[in-house]
Image (cartoon, rainbow, N blue to C red; front, top):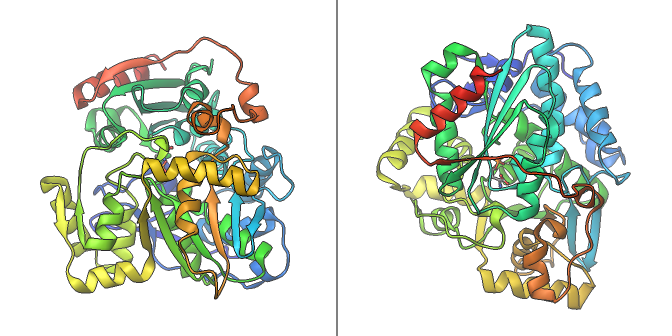
Length: 464
Ligand SMILES: N[C@@H](CCOP(=O)(O)O)C(=O)O
């Protein structure tokens, strides 16, 4: 296990190199780029060949990214907190649906979605970093439903943290909304933004760069723009490979592309994998970019797989950075053009480098519904719409040379109305959803403008 100091650089090349604690507490680099490790640490093959448990795998996979930037034992303590919140001994169990086709269940945590795996860890590590530095932190997070719920659960009541969550008004599921808005902790502010997820994310990035807020104290984000979020999502790819005993093709339901990029990161560390497929819904900017070579923004359309209603996936920037051979100038130019003009066309070399890392499939609403029905009829399994998108894409993959694993990112009862509309009955509630009860909700509705967001955050910060 490494004790050296892992270092981070920005994908846009204009920020000073830093360590894990600083990257964690900043969320995004000062130049607007995303932090990346300066080099990929090597993962010992013991991690996926020796039948290790989740905590052992996660220690091995994540500790090189932290180095000596946090107090001794911080990761160990964080992983104890993480695993204690999961209701399955394997934490992320792999289930075979039929020969060669598997689902990786990532929804056994406190908010019944995969975000818990990294968010519980990030909360514990943030606590360690703030205790060491004596600082307070305001965390700004955009969500299409699952990230916000996991963040609220992980940070509610945290002594040194204020959490502001921006979700698109009326565009998250009722359960996701209640998971965020029924919390009683007064360090949490829920903003319902008139707009879509991409508006929320744009506002978060704008607020993170806002000088007046920065002067009042440290700001960060726990979206997957934060490297620590991605690091926390690497272990389940290793665990899945360990459970399988061989390399797999991973099919990842994709919104902000953090989950898929975490898997790609695992392979950069040496994990054997047969490939990655990003499965998107009809919000298909990523699929068009990979398949046609043109990355073009469109307004997000509403779907049943709401958590994936994303048209400007932040972590695509990390993939482009890698695919350009870590050329920060080229990456910056490309994403500045995208921000300004809403469209960029890749040169053939870049496109073939991107395609070597990931393929992409778009599954529309009709196919998503059909897949929920198929999974129930064929395997007796009730699945959430995001898992349905992944399985529909997974069933299109060739299984003759190796297994295909679809990531099952959320429990179906988070999206009960959609699933029930297809199957004609309500999915059984996850225990953590039953426990939500019927508490009053607290949220503030704002316009999708920087002015409105800044006013709301400044007023909230002033009270704390
Ligand atoms: N699907 C997400 C959108 C934000 O993604 P993140 O991985 O960057 O936090 C959600 O459910 O909020």
